[in-house]
Image (cartoon, rainbow, N blue to C red; front, side, top):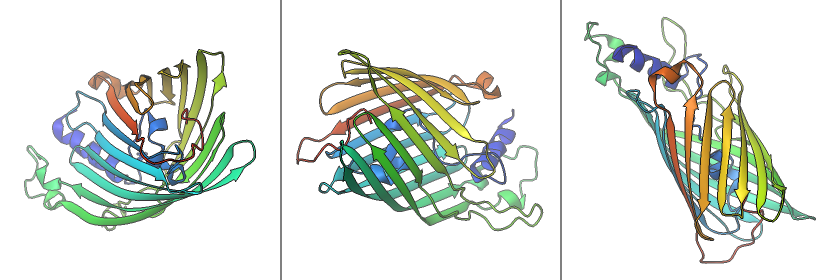
Length: 309
């Protein structure tokens, strides 16, 4: 695929012009990035927690997706939690930086069960550098590529619910409720470029096999208008609560492996590697994802669910 054709494909995928694309970043270690999806998770660890993640997808393809994010969240008291995130996502000529704040309210039930309700609000900064596209032998004055598309203020809001216990969790969230427009209606195709609304359903369970080993299967389902259903299925083995190792499968998309190490009570590091199962497999060397999570020792909070979730 030539450079121009590749850039144009990325442009269409990023804009979602009635295509089958999903616009929001997707993570392999999403269990450590729940706050990016579900605001009800804010403060769920019971302590102030920060997480960094860097993802390089489809390495080897020019203009491949590159994502970096940082999340911080903390309980305010036994009922309320707050958090915030910054996500920078770039692929090809498209770049998007989002800043969001999160709030959760938790109801406690007998048996160490907790139901949290969450709200998310923030803004995005979107840019498509159309003027940088190399048109090759095409018309250098093509009006479609004359001006960049820049949106410096795209407000949005989301909601979520999160149910947890010592053994399992379930979550449902729509992190963006507003389908912001990127462009006006195209005079030829009649299409309007806009953000797509994503709904996420997730769940998992921890099986206590013995004193040394725990088994943790979990899943995530993404529902997006005009796109196929996306399903992630993951299984992890947890050894002496220090070493986490597992495999993941994204239905019809990719397979991957991950390993995480609980260095001490505060620090956790992780790495994941994916291989796509689509035709793109012949054009890239895989996807790399590095995660760093740190729980701060200052302050005291009630741990509302085991740190397996």
